[in-house]
Image 1 (cartoon, rainbow, N blue to C red):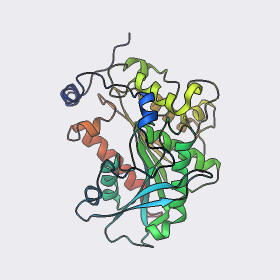
Image 2: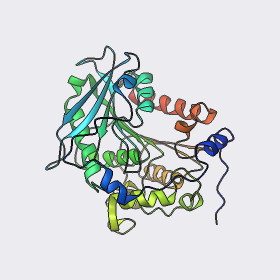
Image 3: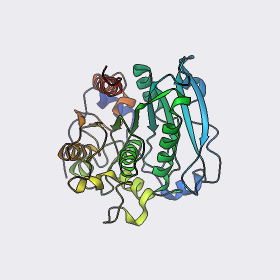
Image 4: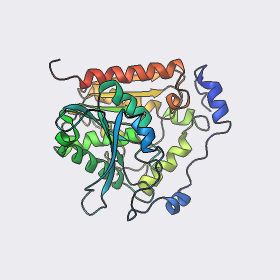
Length: 335
């Protein structure tokens, strides 16, 4: 039995109140029945309302149907543009991919954080409604995200985005999908990305790191939940030898050179979460392969600590570090 590191002093009482018992892992049989079917239109009611997303008129909010992967349904995207940003404005662009363990969430999930980033750098945000596992296993979710990325890149002028200042961002499962998007864009000759923002990303289906074992039954997304999420996406292939790096980007890091040629990355993770060691390993592999990466391991942070306790000092530090990186990466060339 491995002893987990202690939670941050400000986080511990919040977690004890919110999660007196470890959260229940996802039930795949139930999800297969309750998730929207691929032939259905996207959910009518999202996690966040348009009024909430508009922030009192700070953002114009719209939902678009865009061409999906070949032979698949259209993909719904949420577009949030800062007030006054119209066609040809040349603002930064962020394609946002939501979290939810591959099995939950919608296009508005995580948008409070994304709109904070957009406010800080004046960016347009395009958020993806990808199909969820187990109803849609790999490669459906990542191909939906790639279709949304292609649409964004093809409509930058209309959206008011500078095509040279487009990046991808996401947290948890969304962070893993974002890492996969960067790999796909590189390997398919797709859109040139200014950066990839990976927050506590879900990268490795093998689920066998020290931190995965150490935080079992402790973290808000522990190894049991993690195994269920990966199984939903990959079925019996999970943990085996033939998993695609576009499903589990840590697989690309296994071979020297596997992460070369990727855009600059920002990675952060808590020291008290399941994903800690796979995130550190991924950053190390990016450096090994000649890439640029900024890594933060927040001491005492659990999975999603900044959402659970946004006013804690550790959360404010994480927010500041992310926004500082975004300002740097998205600044105009030569500025």
